[in-house]
Image (cartoon, rainbow, N blue to C red; front, side, top):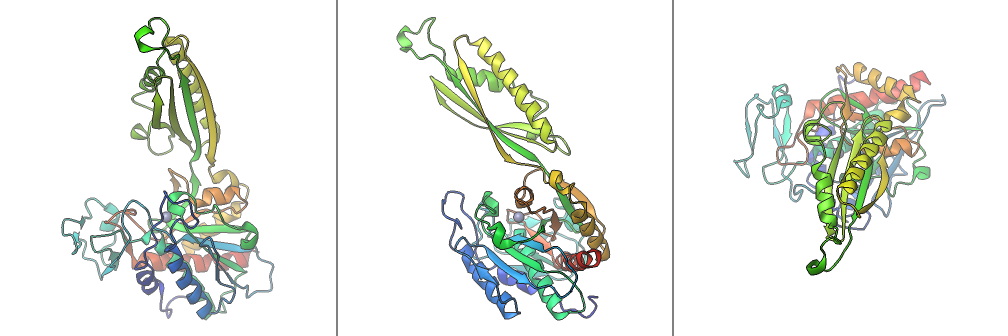
Length: 415
Ligand SMILES: [Zn+2]
């Protein structure tokens, strides 16, 4: 199917990463930085140029476009989604991508800062890419493979399908979002305008990786109230909320329950912020687990510990606030098993071994899944993201293009 196809994913990628699209968590605007629209405008131009007449960039920085169906069968509308912004953690200004053809398996020294060395010892996946063409940044910036690899993969899929009308597919909706890296990627998404039944984000890493599971997440905040009194005359009256909070935090388990002591399938509770004065102190937690019901158990356990802290400081009181953040997309995907099944089949048809994995975090797909668009995450090859050592293999990106072309076809065949 792809023997005579000249993939465009690499040249597209090299074009997109030069455009600075860093998002900004301090900004209240949407998109958080206007410059994200520079890439959005380019993508709309390119989509229109290859024939997607309805391609549009909206005021919030979202790109929507449709590749119409070329089959008479009723096929669900499938959305392919990637985010245009890059992480605030590392500069994305003046990215100078470098293609390392036929990678020799050794250290890659980045020329703009020779102290920046991408070593296969620290990046075991890179060691498996000997012979591939590897793209890196130049040492001064991140690369932006997260997620411009996903953007380029989707664009090349559209380009392939337009050149191969014999490959049948239903209507495909293309969606490029701003501000994913600051957790606001779907805040202003217009689900009606999108009008898709199922979706896939292209934002996972290693060749063949497929993520259909994320954490479930709550935020919990406990505010301790002390009893204030003039400190010169506080004997037997004053209760210091800071000390209650400190006692409580110190009572957290030291060898379990935390991000620094768990991995794999284990969740955690993690204090992220303490604020306060003698009269009142607040401890904020994030709470994570793959099993949503376990969040309640963690929260109950924390409340028990809070009660113990209050007993140690008679007169102190406390109040608790729990806020739902996001939920494990698997709860939704289990109701629509074909979304996962077809993706796994497509990865295999592309000649790639599937690696199923769980994201120890959230993705836009976890929110999309609960907004009505069941949406697992497919590999692009992007690796070591959010830093100067970021890299991507051109062959991995091409495998992702093949995968989603097959995926569009599988949906048509099975409908
Ligand atoms: Zn990403």
